Image 1 (tube, rainbow, N blue to C red):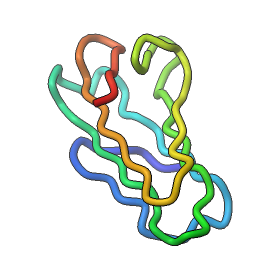
Image 2: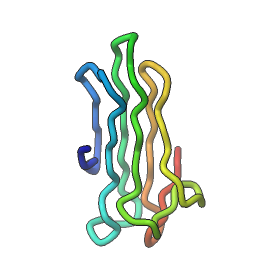
Image 3: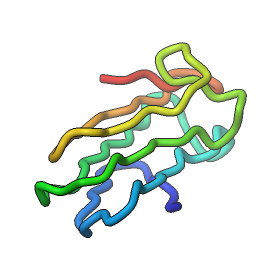
Length: 88
């Protein structure tokens, strides 16, 4: 597992197993900050799981993690309010 940081996050290593990336805690975030994640570009990518830092966090209103399952998949998440992330 690895922690995501504000800005661009690139999975540039070959995934031989699913990878888990964890969103920052809400205490460290400011409304409007963005996290961009780009999955591996290797043709044999395993899923990348983007995990919430705490059960109270939501992504697009759901208390569930999200997954990048396609080769070269990407997502941008914006922190919009306490414990709330939106996908753009």
